[in-house]
Image 1 (cartoon, helix red, strand yellow):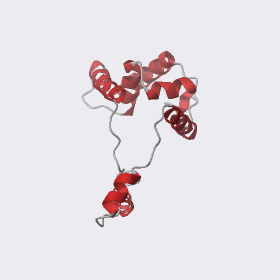
Image 2 (tube, one colour; image 1 turned 45 degrees about the vertical axis):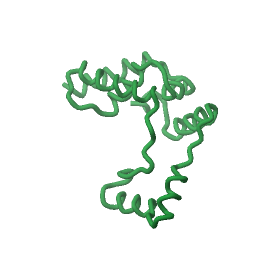
Image 3 (cartoon, helix red, strand yellow; image 1 turned 45 degrees about the horizontal axis):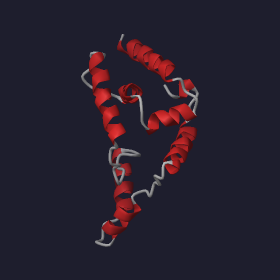
Length: 134
């Protein structure tokens, strides 16, 4: 859906990193936690390699990021959006709708930097969900 809106993943990642850095949030890749585990003999990279080999790329990510208040709000809206559409499970389309419904957060800052119209994106997602449901 985002690609249909002209958003390429690499560009979205770049904007995300830029916005986080501007906010003083620097991604460390969990290095302090990895170092602590390594000091007791746990190789996080090896665990990740094995999980990817057995369960597919991206199956294991460490560390799991803590949820910000904005992320929690978006996830609450995600559930509401899925329910409003009569669906018991939610997918990435519902997460995007939840993020848009939350009305604030870094994700929306990224979309704004990429010049995405939130209302237009919401309508496109709803149209896709309706089309896929039929």
